[in-house]
Amino acid sequence: MKMKQIARLVPSAMFALAGSQASAAGFQLLEQNASGLGNAYAGTAAVAEDASTIFFNPAGMTQLQAREFSVGLDFVRPSFEFSNNGSQSFTNTPSTGASADDAGDWAFIPNAYLSWALTERLYVGVGMGAPFGLKTEYNDDWVGAAQATMFDIKTININPSIAYKLNDVVSLGFGLNWQRMEAQYERVATAMPQLPFAALRNTKLVLDADDDSWGWNVGALFNISPSTKVGLSYRSKIKHELEGSLKAEGQAQAGVNALVGGDASAEVELPDTFTLSVAQQLNERWEMLGDLSWTGWSSIQEVEIYSDKAGSVVQTLDTKFRDTWRLALGANYKLNDAWKLKFGVAYDQTPVQNQSDRLVSLPDANRTWFSLGAQWNLDPQSRLDLGFAYLMVNDTKINNDQLSSNFATPTANRGKVTGEYSSSVIILGAQYSMSF
Image 1 (cartoon, rainbow, N blue to C red):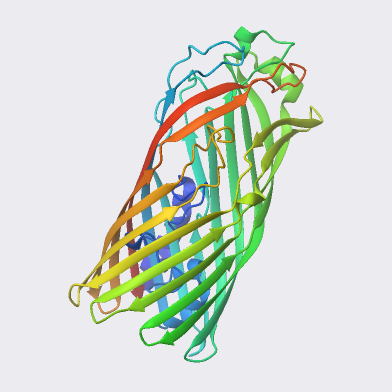
Image 2: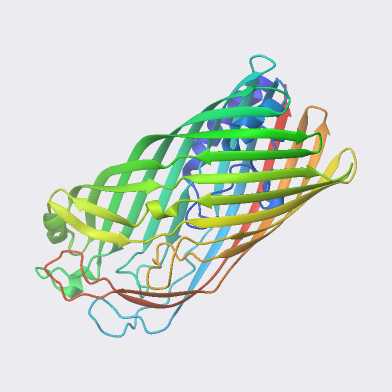
């Protein structure tokens, strides 16, 4: 009966991967389970409490039962509310355009994992999730429409893994990652000398591109003592060579498509991540967790959009990202044999260096996590985790100046967006895990 349930749940999780929103800094998604949400994802590479350890540290499979399955869903609600303070349109005049609606909305991030012991020491498993994602969407007449009206990144990651228990102290793990990335970017067309401004105001440029690529991850778990575990994990960079189409929609679509429409491409190298985690059992009831992680966001300095028809780069998204750190602390309290309570806080650094480099498609800033959760042991073989997190995001100033007098470039002069974002994120999650 349980195996039939697994067969139904796994494809459902795959189809559900359509929606995602950035919740960690940049457009990284930490929500690869909901069981870690209540701890603000502290101790991710050390806890190994369910099959989701396949993503965070594959070596943790050696701490699980012979066969384990885990499936979860996180609901994410980011809010990006923009206040205008002197923006200028692409005609180089003070903007009188409309204010922006909230650029965030509800989205969901599913996951599914299966771990299997081949011998007492050798384990295999596979995981499915969405490690990167972002969607911001504005009304078409907002003051920054020439820079972006919609930006949507989705990833699907399938992660076959293997783990080996060297001895009672050391376990090692390795995984491969097949990753699909889909990107859609929309903005109002601007600054084409062959076409009138009035027509361009009612015309959108739409980039739609995708790619499949490969990466890898490794991990080690050290059982220092019966009460202390230390985990190390590393996930590699993954380079995507996105290919698709660039097309215009609206009043001047024929003229714009004649200049830049058709096949288009872009490259982006998603960052690598290193994590050090500790899990310390203080007594029968209390467990403390810690996490220090580094993400190599400097791999993304710019994203160039190339048009085959134009024979050149027609737009560059200047990100100028920096590498970042994340620190998380968590605690678990065993209330009784059926219930465990979870707590966590974290500080998450943004890869955006300053307000002039901040993109309207990614109005990111440093954030602080406050998390609560509970684990309910339904029976000796199954449990349910519930989690909640509120992410307090610093008020975010933006002064992105893309004004230009170079009207010979088809996509030049995208205006100047000056103002401030008031942002926050709410996350709700549930995870069901069982051994069989």
